Length: 475
Image (cartoon, rainbow, N blue to C red; front, side, top):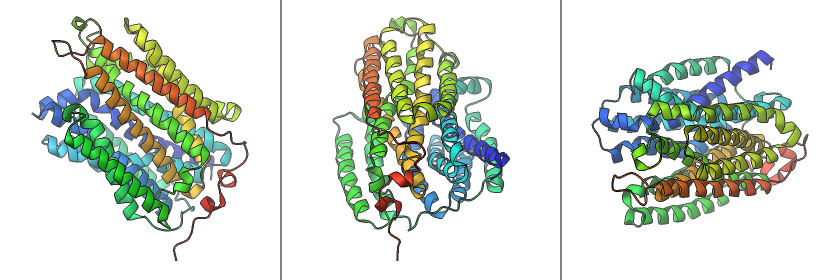
């Protein structure tokens, strides 16, 4: 493929994945504005985030597998059109119910991550793959930061609906260019979509993530939370049994058991817990009125600007990791990235009395996010057969999201478990939360140390078991 074509393909993939990543965090700072504008309650408004999380968790691995089977370019265009429709519906939503439905539709875009990684692996020259995956991971990581930083100025200058109108224009252009210029991959997995596996995967993910996201309102000991956790465990066991017996599983468990895959996924679960919890709770800490004895009383825009160092650092370190990976290896980068996250949270536990201190800590955590995102993707892509790339990277993204939900839920218990008479959390709630996140990131660094070192120059197919490289064909 001519180099100009690969550059255009990368630009399309980066734009689509970056917009979806931005949509993950863009609406969070504006939730109070949405609640007021649509005349709804705070508990109902939180479903704008919950619906998006659940939808993305379900569709990311399923459509990653569909792309492996029917064509990644075809699936990519369909997913971009779904995101476009979701943004359009959200921009026009007359009430909170329609907005929640729109967010479910937008969640389909979670599949952009595994599809993009798969297209890079299939279409780019082998020497370009690690660097391109690192650069794309940097864009994905930075997209979440852009959402946090940009939400305030957009809402202040325009209206919360422009949080969706702007992506409408970008995604529409991206879909048209993708349809015209992104090549269709000739590499296809054999078999068909296991719809029973898809239903069971969706069921246990929803049963797990729903109580994690709503336990603060329902109560951790409520029948709904306990019942859903029980259902999640039973459905997960049933899904594992079904996938193990299926001739064409949705997620090939043999691939998930590869040493480089399960250790990377373990690190993703733990680091995701720290990363998403920081994104969820640090803006609230910054916006806490100084009358609480801590915090800075910052507005949405000001708190976003204080997190700008995180955005810049994650993009730069993500790009830099593509240059470092051939020299030091993805394992070392993942270990270092998670360790930087632990160091940042440790500093934040003791060092949060001035705005510049929080900005420095945010930048340090951003360095860790950039290194970790890029190295996780490279470790997964470099360890699985080409026809399993979409499903494997989709599950890695999903596991990171599950970790994020667990981290946010645990941090919420510490932050909101005991409130001042004014209704604001005590400072100790935040410091205990930061300490927990430091331990989770430190554990992620430990998990990364378990990742086996893969000798350079050996393709993943050579390292994978024969049974994984040659799945049974459907007769």
